[in-house]
Length: 439
Image (cartoon, rainbow, N blue to C red):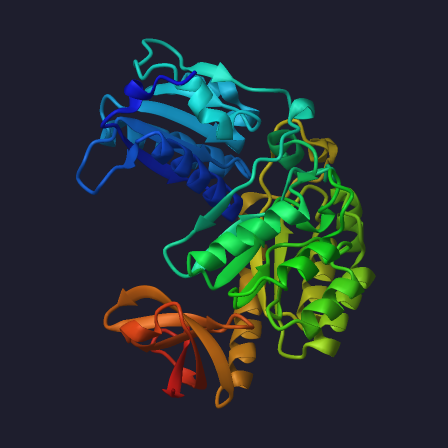
């Protein structure tokens, strides 16, 4: 039984590091606390409770989490500090010993936060830890969040069964699991009732949807496509071996699913892909890109790449660079390899220096810039439907086309969260968006 008097007149601050999935879960935690009367802290106020949802995808992410925890503790002196998320799951005792931390919740416990807030008394020593081993993380906890623009992020899946050699996510998030199609459709219908126009489907390995319910990802997107009131869906990162031709053809024919894909390649070298224990080769990846472009010539295709992994020799990187350059993709998201404790990649002998990682990263970022700008240039002069967002800066607003071209226009309040048919003009001043010629 929760003592409701404990939370009277309490204020909470929420901090999220990492992926959109974390943001969705933080939003759910905020709703749970709000239902108990805990309001969100306002600017200039000191919070009674601080909830920090962490990331641990790289060593740098761990460092940023530690810095954020210490900084937040100083910003809200006396606040009861709760830390959760991937860093808290992987290294709970380390987190518990960071100054100011009172409570550490693992992946299985994070959305049951109210059960662990028995009192808000600061701890003298290390924080209290409640965490389960990764093999025991079984619950799927639904989450949906709205960002400060127009998008909602709907969590459809969690966890991963892939165990790539460089990755700790299966240990931080547990095994693959998901919500039911029926429950996710209900959440989408609620977003529509609230006036939401765009939903991004999020998860750890969303193409693996159905492991716990016996359903399929294609059946999920077919069901969501029928929800009235949602103008657009976007599919977040999906593994190349799981973005089936059936899924691609459905998106091409759909009125609501945007021609926008985000597909992790990680390396364009088949030898490195084997070392990474990825479940595809470059031939399959090329087929997926060509299939998308054959049915959706204007589709935006974002690609994740990791440079400097153990085993990536100069020759292997050059193979990767040439392969990526040959692909008809739109933009690269480039990450430098970070060694993670407990991963199989640590058994690979060849180590890439930080200087070489930086040079390789810059080479791919240059290719990315060329591809993105070429993609935008092709669309200048064309008409497109743009969903405009709330943000106003310098008298300007922006939005995105279905195929994720950023568009800038003079701020018009009546356009916020509305889709407008516009003609795309030339570049804005910093070449980050296209201007509109007329509405």
